[in-house]
Structures are given as C-alpha cells and as structure tokens.
Image (cartoon, rainbow, N blue to C red; front, side):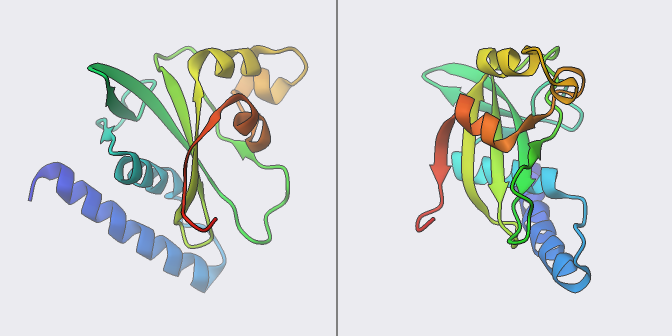
Length: 156
C-alpha cells in the first residue's frame, strides 16, 4: 500500500469514527476539514498536498495544466441554522479556485461547489462586512452564488 493509499484509508476510517462520535455525543469531532479534503479527492480524483501547504489543499490536472485548489467544508445538519458560513479563505495565498464540500449528518458529501479565484477575491473584498473583509468568511449561499455546482450526489 502506498503512502497516499494509506492516508486515504485513514481518512475513510476517520469519517466513520466522526459519524459515530457525533451520534453518541451530539458534538462534532473536529475533523470536518480533513474529511472534506478526503471526499473531494475521492470524488473529483484530486491529489492532496502535504500538510500545511500554504494556500491550497489539493491539485488537479486539467488539459495538461495543474490547478491549485483550497478545500473548505460545511457540515449541514438537519437542525442547522439557515445561514452558515464558509471558514476563512486566505486571499493573500496562491490558489486558482476554492472548493466547498457540503457534508450531511453522516459526513457524506452531497454537493461540491467551485468558485474561481477572482470572484472569491471580489466577494471577500467588497465593502460592507467586517467578518468577510477581515476574516475572509462568506456565507454558504454567497459562495454558491459566485461559484458553480461541480458535483452532486445522485438522488439529492
């Protein structure tokens, strides 16, 4: 088994443990970001980058070009409040696009949205929101509006 295959296996097991932990305690385990990276890599056939890679989490080869992708996540639970935010996007780092992986209560991906660098920067630097401008946070609905649906689980 290669190192990449082993990491993917560990992340698959982590997803199962996170699901069970949430069912037993009602609290998240704190591994949603890692699970989202695993799901994006598995579903979209991406190459995950080493830990602490500044600016992006995965690489994708498209028509001979390598694209650098930040991966963000949001776990949407049945009792979640309507307005949820995407975690901080650092626009000072290098990346080509941002993926938003939406997970259900079982930590299974049900949608992946992609927004290109330019619309992300425009949305985060638009006047009016301190959270958006200073912390790089944006509403899930805004991310969907500036991006495109890249993948949806069948039946959703």
